[in-house]
Length: 439
Figure 1 (tube, rainbow, N blue to C red):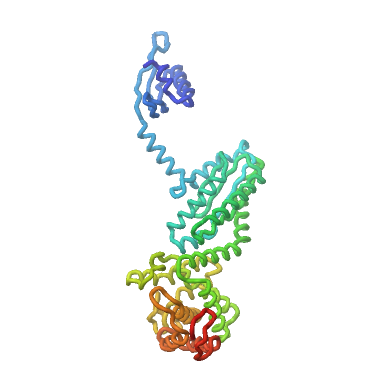
Figure 2 (spheres, helix red, strand yellow):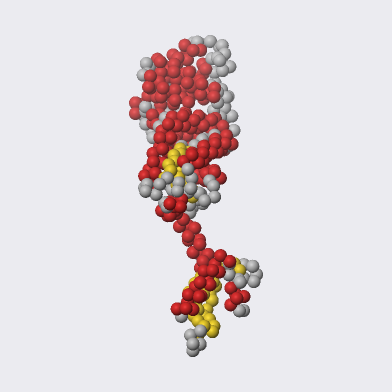
């Protein structure tokens, strides 16, 4: 094959570089070493390493080239694979921090001005990890990454720069355009939230941006400014976000378990009545109401087949079910709004005599609010139909509480709760309560 014919196999974008290398080597009478892709006769692209030198006549004119051509396709593929790993995030496939920092240095140049940057931090990821596990948390991250990617334009650099942090470099972009992109991302997050099958997926990402407009400005200052703007946004929306996350968790719990809104309402009503009898402070009363609503949030982390099993649980299934106070504790510790009731959630299945779980606390080692919820939750469970047992009458449930006073239940709380029930439902009447149950 002639050189011209071979040259025609070289990919067009590499031909000028290869021609210049040959011409330069011919003038300097040096050895040529270069790598380039060709398209083989079967249409497959191969990478070639060429090492050759000219053969000259007595007058110094080049007569021919001699050397070797080596197929280095396999080596190139491995290099490309390593380059991909070096510059991409394994989970999302987006660029990583290393690549982002390289591009940041490269784009911090007059030709890219105005240069904007958006920094985003996923809200509530820790709650999802603690609620549903890290596999679901990773899925949430990849979904948000896809959402961000769909919002970016060609030429923008999107990277996952930390566990829940993303950055976008926007060359030749005014601040107004960056703010418009932020609005688009928020709109996509809201659409994602509405479509999400799992109500615990409250898609939200706090975003901040800044724009460098002059070459004499330090871009690092604008990175810090974008971070500050992001944290301001996070602070402003944190209260409503936490409320939304809590509502989402509660909705998810109702979907997963057999609990109902009516159960939560009864728990609140009875808890307030007991709290009033005990003359709890306003803060403790607020915590008790929150505990009444969310004491079982750890059940979100329990397998659906166990939660919805129509019959009694096996020993193995019961062992899994008994993990829900610890799961609930981790969920509560992940949210500023729930942190005050985390210990109460952990201890609401402890027994007065130390036979409960998960720690085996006894008597006043168990937090007061946990002792209150323990009695109320047991009462409501006894007086509700279950797949494996019919509801007790309120009269029988009161007898059961009396029987377990001093063993399962704090005797003081049990006595106060019996008084509350008798005030609400009457002493020994057979009338129906508001839920249709007999006393």
